[in-house]
Amino acid sequence: MPIDRREFLKLGGLTLAGAVPGLLQAGGALAMPSPLSQRPADHTLRIGRSLVELAPDHVVSTRTYNRQFPGPLLRLKQGRPVLVDIHNDTDTPEQLHWHGQTLPAAVDGAAEEGTPYIPAHGMRRIGFVPGPTGLRFYHTHVRAGADLDLGQYGGLVGPVYIEPPHESGAWDREVFLTLKEFDPFFSKGGDMAMDFLQPDRRDPALQQRGETAMKASLAAGASHGYEVGYQSFSINGRMLGHGEPIRVRAGERVLLHVINGSATEIRSLALPGHAFTVLALDGNPVPHPATVPVLWLGTAERISAIVEMTHPGVWILGDLADDDRTRGMGIVVEYAGHDGKPQWIKPPPFQWDYRRFASPDAPPPATPDETIELTFAKRNATLHGFNQWTINGQPFDMHSMQPRFRLQYGKRYRLRMHNASDDIHPMHLHRHSFEITRIVGQPVAGVIKDVAMLGGYQSMDVDFTADQRGLSLLHCHMQLHMDFGFMALFDCA
Image (cartoon, rainbow, N blue to C red; front, side, top):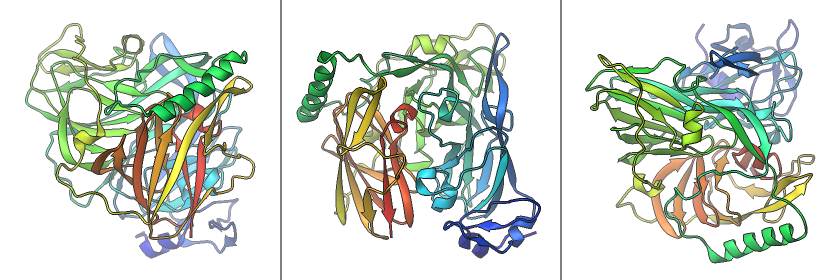
């Protein structure tokens, strides 16, 4: 049965209850049954617990979609309406967030925006028009707090690729890679790389503020707040050496679609003897495709890059961190006609710079209608040993969930983000894409994203048009940060 696009555009989302389906719109009012609720779904996703075999001697029990990790690849067509049935076979309510898409708040998949939960042992049917094109993904969006079995610590991650009307096809084949850690644990510190971003200049005022607050906390007898570490690492749910290799032929052009599905970790990838030509960041084509030796991805960032297979052998495509790679964060790339032990050669030092992919001759960005100043800060170990995070001095209130900022539809806004901590924060804005327009005072043009890494004690400007009515959530995409205050709501009327 053909689907009427206009009918989809009128629907916020569908919820089925009992034998007679009904329509639950964004305001919560039950409407008459829709013909859409009678037709089969295009895709079905089941949230449940299953075993994931990272290696023959290492099996983890975790939450997954359709009893697999990653969840099934959903290839959607831009502008072609789609119906998805989401079943929740667990004992707790769930959310499924369609990361990177411009969808109604009732469908987007965040309770803070008013998306209805998928009830425990219940289901929800949703209808939406996919977009924008490119590499997106879906994942859970619930608060985990101190429970490392919930939220993005588990296996609730799956890729989405939204196909444009006409693909260029300038590659021989595509490979989708989802990077993910398992077996999480709490610790009192970590060794995450912090020196890979360019520009690397810190703001002295932000640094003084953050360091003064930390010194005062430690002097008062507090220890450092909890961090999360992991014992197991994987690509596509298999530890290095235990999954099927990426099999290639000399001369092929392979398009890698890479998703950092981590709850808290920044990831890197290198392939000895090869380079990556970055075509898109977060699914959005870059104005200047650049070739780099290493990919860096903050939590929830995605990169689509071409690798020309011109260095035959058997290689490890893996993380730069030796400990993480040896514990699983890698995958073998095997050329036809070659065998033997996979080789790893660490590349020379390389720093990640969003400006590398920007428009080199673009004019300065247009003056926004309004600039919103945002300062992010850490209160060390103040919540039973967990750090609390604030935006402009206030943590997000999970009880009232009131919007902090009011927007007017159609206006262009600049978020001027100041990081008064030494952590890197992958900042995500729901239901919108934004343009990075300034990093540490340096202008940038044409780089469109939905997550951007904000360096420690640095500032960044991102511009977006408020073209989605209702509530939209801004947050650090590290689960440990967003759970403890690092969120704010925008309300667009």
